[in-house]
Amino acid sequence: MPVNGQSHIRIARPSRDLAAAERFWADGLGLSVVYRSDGGTAPGEHALLMVGWPDASWHLELVHEAAAPVQPRPTEDDLLVVYVDGPVPEELIARLEGHGGRRAVSPNPYWNEWGVTVEDPDGYRLVLCTRAWSNS
Image (cartoon, rainbow, N blue to C red; front, side, top):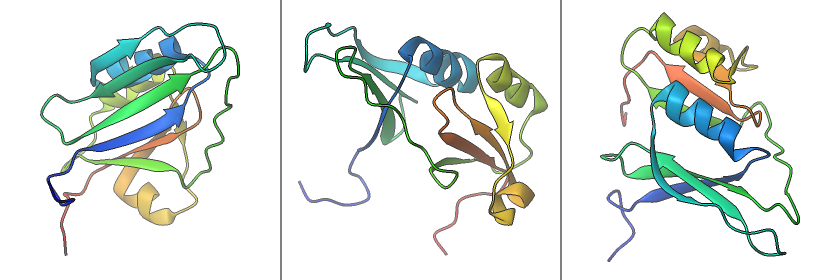
């Protein structure tokens, strides 16, 4: 199978706390748990949480290895952007904040004008963009 626009994408990140991450991404944003593994405590064994929308061609993988945890090191430019194509519902922002998110101001004025930025419990940024996605 060729690599093209139909290829599935997995975005993988370390997480300090998978339960907190699940509250934000699943309960807050509304992603589904696609897969979960509690892993073990021996070196090389890790817990894994995959979340996404069932009909999407991407999912987010969050990993935690108890024996040798990798600390997330997000920058303010590590963004996951979701194009909402309209106003971002205030109840969604409140739900994200109520599930461990924190509103943030972007250093890029574009995202402040055209969206809402919320940091997840690990500090990675989700931007809910009011614009529609366009390839042009």
